[in-house]
Image (cartoon, rainbow, N blue to C red; front, side, top):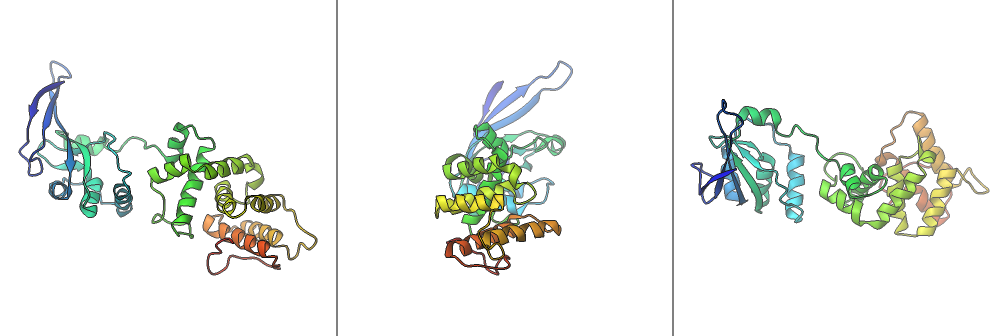
Length: 299
């Protein structure tokens, strides 16, 4: 319960922060447990001082900082109750990535600040819970085919961002970005749903999330033509000259690649499919199809 108001604590970063003292008496034989809690705005100067008073901590993960920078810069940062934690003597034990992002961005955030956690408690319990994945979030939002939709949202984000290698972490969507796509992009939602319904036909051939991505991309060009192309690719349908039919040759190229133990990553499969689409749309024929040297943006 709240015992008294503390206008400030004697730490370099606490100037102007109004703390509430929270005291808990677990039993008559144990000392009261006291925390000081404040809700405050943290700007670059205060974040810098907080970081200068950091206890032993894990190594900063640059990718996580970049993710936070995007969230703060895009206005996706929000107060969720997760505090920045300090020990009783004012040493930072949790929050270094958030504070580093504030310093790098120059923008301010609003956060809870909690003082009084022991270093040992923070070390053994902080971040030990299971975080919610994008799939979890989409499921909670009532989306069907949530796992396929989550993967497709990330692939589509990378595609739109120009990361057509679909590899690594640089171009990956942040959780809020992926959730936003997975709940607001109705075309992507429908593409994921249709592709998931056909999953038994794509198994061992093309990843279902990749099919959803391909649908999402091609529907923007020509919905009916895209569905004809995808159906022929899925069923192995060919025209009167299968040896040069780009859709059939695409199917053969992917199956041959998978049979040889080649990977099924989007960066390997999607370019072959989009190259076949371009050939099919222009009426060109090929005896063999492989991914071109430059990414084949669909026409």
